[in-house]
Image (cartoon, rainbow, N blue to C red; front, side, top):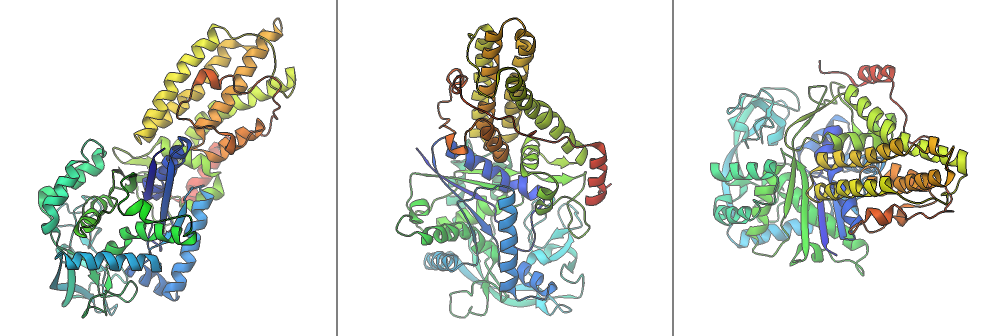
Length: 565
């Protein structure tokens, strides 16, 4: 058994996630966590809301709320949304916690003691009309490198180039839209990344065979261009006050304390049961832990460069990321998701339209792993109707209905396996081995293709075996065929569990089983699993697993959630 630490990019408190956020980090991390548990590994899967910075101050101001109350409200909404999507966090915490403050202060003190913190007087953008210094991401303008007109002051999401607000062409306040901006001098603290560049580069080289191209390429791009000192403080009120004399009126920059939040959230989890848990067993001198991170490509630079450099600079033996799964973007009908423009599906609305498993399966079948992908309701309906309803749901329904009507509601007895069953077992074992391979490698689109292929094998088998015809002349042989098919339902339920846990639970319940009955899949032998449910085991037919999405429903959804076209 291995210890697997799984973290997902921390969602900003002010914006509930849309489908792109879900597939970019949250959903794949959950599927991987569920799969690792099924292999018998000790898994710690943590995430939480990212609560500091101007994002929260501006959001609270717009809603006329105290910042703390604003964060409390949205944290609860985030948590509820992820429960509805069946994300299986071991702990969902907050970056504003006392535990994160304690660890952030400790890490900063170590960096300062080791000479990696420097003071600089900088020029920072002040919005005269807003009466405040603007956080980098609240300044919008044209990227000087690629010409993208909606680049933020911290990073251009189009070319991923990290920016300073003063780099932008025609900058304006994202808070009010005002271009009445002034550049004023203010004193800040910086993490001296150039001092850590050599050590960081050597560390990243060890990840070349293990990181996907999206993550490794972005990290190498940063190193090739040369690292620059990175400001880690801000002129704000909401955040952790800087624990250094002369800087008490400033707070740590959200991108300094947010990644440390993974550790702080783990300490929150451990502090709830200190007699059983130790956060240090996962984060400090924990040589037996494999750390896997999931995030969209816009977050990759901070988790492949800034955060690892921060931990290296402490001189302490912190757990670093072993595998960084970076995702590209999911667009909506060819354009961007936009809450303000009422375009796109957001997670808390999605589960009101269809069960979470519809979305989970579609998103992972179309995961933007090597390039951007696009969501449309036409594609969504086609996949749900063909794969879920037509292939999986239809198989389960026809097998159980046929068996119940012809032979009763128990796994039928009699008959012998033959060449068809032998061929089925061989084909399935190959498919299952490939499915596990891709799940281990976090190649989710390929894994979903294999999962669908496994369902198709069952449909091919029953088509060739023709139990509806065989039963007219050889009831014993028909019983053997249907017994195999019922065992296939159990196999489908087990293998679908990481992706579609509710559907898996529903399939198992028809067989008188629960999720607790799912075996360790480390040595999953199809020949044995095809006879796991013996004759006489009761089952129920149940309702249809899925419903078809009609063309009328598709048009209704398009109107309801807008279109970029």
